Amino acid sequence: MKDMDKAVQRLNEAIGRKEKILIYGDYDVDGTSSVALVYRFLRNFYSSLDYYIPDRYDDGYGISEKGVDYAYDTGVKLVITLDCGIKAINMVNYAKSKGIDFIICDHHKPDDTLPDAIAVLDPKRPDDDYPYPHLSACGVGLKFMQAFARDNGLNELSMIYPLLDLCALSIATDIVPMTGENRVLSYNGLRRLNDHPCSGIQCIIEQCGLKDKEITNSDIVFKIGPRINASGRMMCGKEAVDLMIAKDKDTAKRSADHIAQYNETRKELDKRVTEEALAMVNQLDTKDKKSILVYNPKWHKGVIGIVASRLTEHFYRPAIVLTSACGFASGSARSIQGFDVYGAIDSCRDLVENFGGHTYAAGLTLREENIPELADRIEKWVEEHITDAQQQQHLDIDMEVKFREVTNRLYKHLKMLAPFGPGNNKPLFVSRHIKDHGGCRLVGRDLEHIRLELVDPETGFTHNGIAFNMAEKYDIIKSGKPFDIVYTVEENTYSNNNIQLLVKDIKESETNSIASVLALLIKSKDDGDVVGSTGTLVNIHE
Image: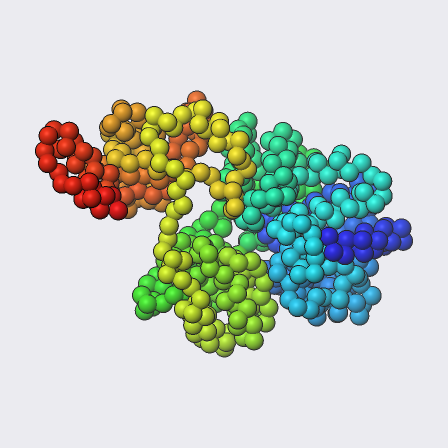
């Protein structure tokens, strides 16, 4: 990786001179797990270490003046940043004026000019020929420690493997591609997570009700990750690092209990702000709009990324949600499949103070008076660049199957393709002409989900399943008419390890489909009726 030799050399010098080292990371799971990984690695043989996680409100995103001042006041000579810093030109210069060096470990898109750091480790650098550009920030930190271990003749495997549970967390929660090196790190990280996770993650696993169950990437994304994220969303992400570096179970449990309280608060805020944002969008004339931008200075900054995701899912358009922080409007952007929301913000860089992120998720800060112009220019850019296909929500179905083919044996074969994620999604199946077996019912606090008991009338085979947030499809199921379902095959750990269907979509079966017409025509011909020429059949097929 470009600059890796410089980074290792400077770290060697810092340890040799007994300089104080500060490990500085973003407040999300990728950032906090990165900080925990580097801290846990280095503390094995070095003690003059500290770590810093910026506060969403007091510091804002990335390297802050407050963070640099903290480093200076505590005698730090070297700062290692993780999951931030790739655009922090001014802050790195400010730190240099105070005699502080930086090693930047990031995985976000860089600008043409890089910060004047000792080393900038980022596989997305255009001048880097590292063979895999999609590492998470935790993956970049791991590579740094791996290179350091190799340079110093340390036992690389024995020091790196115990940290892979943190890598698995970061890869799953940061939604990086589940391909190439990420699959290798995730696969081994999941093994570590299941066999011997660190004390802090073990406490979170128990709180999530996952003890003695096989943990998958889905568990990380929907259960473990949101809890750890709640620390940085509601208070300060430093407690998430405290959790992941805890050496004993009692210390870890105290941190986990605090984070559990933050998570409950996060859920309540998430629900309220989402409802307010939906109401705001519905009041605006957005029918012909290609994008969504909403702003409320009273919204809690910790949940606006979640709210942006909710708006994108609900309206299926790129969405930006802004609130007030540190005297600026600050927010998050989320996108739909195939559309580059980062590029849209980049086209308005003259209006924003700071921004960064990926194709589908980005953060930005701007002056409040620039919001109207930003909304207009984002809308214009989206109109010019979004395609008709990108505006149509769709599922990429891998195969049509009959219920009799969906077996435990199939599930075991599918597991061999794991870990799943972007670039290696779980296979999606469709089964047609399915009916309610009698036990389908609405479930959940607000009756927003459907518990399914389904039957294939043709074969008599049955399957249970769950359809999350699809209550609007309940009438289709209860109509008595056949319907089609799209789903993934999952393990039902609550029912003797039987399989269940995780349903992604439901629609009425087409009674006049080509297959049905052909079947009727063929039956008529078999019965001796004249059905027309072969050419007619070909035309129907086409």
